[in-house]
Image (cartoon, rainbow, N blue to C red; front, top):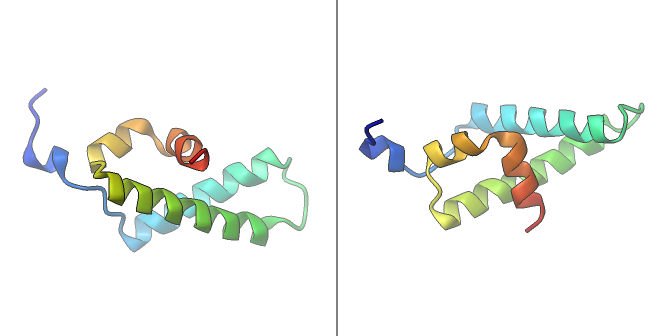
Length: 83
């Protein structure tokens, strides 16, 4: 596989991508707590914080979009949640 300049472009999420990431993260948080009623807002707010921290760390570390996509969102969340 041939690498291109785009492969090394920094990961910068669009507003739509960020929103989708938050939705996925909120789903995993709800899943983790057993989908009990009354926690959706807290899940969303916590997911926003996690995603924003993760995206900031990715930016600071110069991780490319390709590297991020290879890791996958669920694995990325696990990595950045531990920092």
